[in-house]
Length: 123
Length: 288
Image (cartoon, rainbow over all chains, first blue to last red; front, side):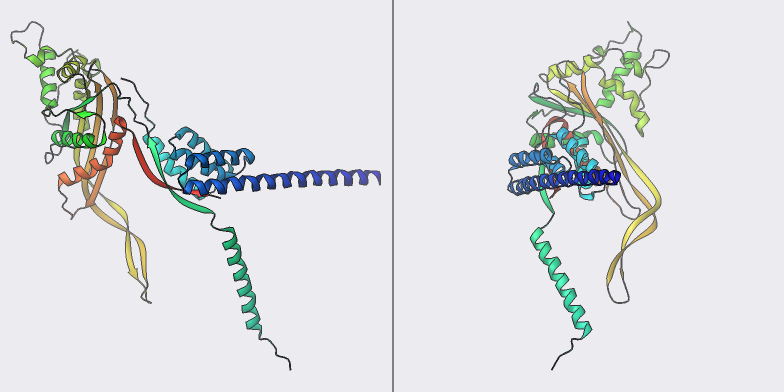
């Protein structure tokens, strides 16, 4: 009887911990999503620096949000920060390896990155 | 009086309700991806801030005789740099590098203190680069007619001749010198290719179907190597090799010069990106 009670208590506490963390994750995603939406809105109006600020915030709030990393990579690419763009794309692909849209963006990015890859030499 | 609803109508109503619910959800959620145009700035591969002028000197060229690879490449690159670079382009006669290399080679293979007095150009020719010399210490012979890639190899030592390029640099007030090799060769290939063929089915609908067909094709290969030389020191600061090819159906008679420009059009952005910053336009997808 005692053993059953202990198991039940442990199960209930584990469930409540899981529920709390799930709720926290959901909250984080909701908050990050708001930043992502705002970032898209300002990027469409050409305000890329503001978009970067929003998307950096989004990935900080929810580091498992692949779309936020993708958008951040696009913005870095637009700003010519190619190293940062590659890192963000790789992170997005790591989170969602089967996302065709992220992969397509990354392939297009790599073409440009390869073009700019030759070492800069000073005469 | 009661009216019994027909079961088919009820099903339609349910389907309509589901459809409306789905549409409402889609409208409420909005799209999840947005295509957006971007412009990626690319920094030049070379720091050319030390130069105000650029000399497109000339190229050792070979392959087909239908196109003068040296003249055409010099003309094209000069015109591109005039509009797309901040460097001033020097208008000078196109250098016949093949002849210059032959002269340097002759001077290098002649024994010291020979009877024949060296010409102005020969007098400044230093010994050839070790890589281009044969086992006996003699420089490799330079083929008169350049047909393929290996014929160009012995000419490489011309670009390593720092004394010569330094002298050219002094002559033109220390510009950035662009030179190299251009190989423009005919190319034929036969084999199976995928072609999209439009077909009309029995209902009159048009479909595009991929069809594998055996084809004889002919075209050209363009292989330029651009060598960037510091006119102050005569040293090579950067070089890059490109390769492009184009194939047409064997029946199509495409002039060699048109193909040359078609292929150079593909390469020019890469060439320019070595010297000047560029913006590359594209589109990406933003996700929610």
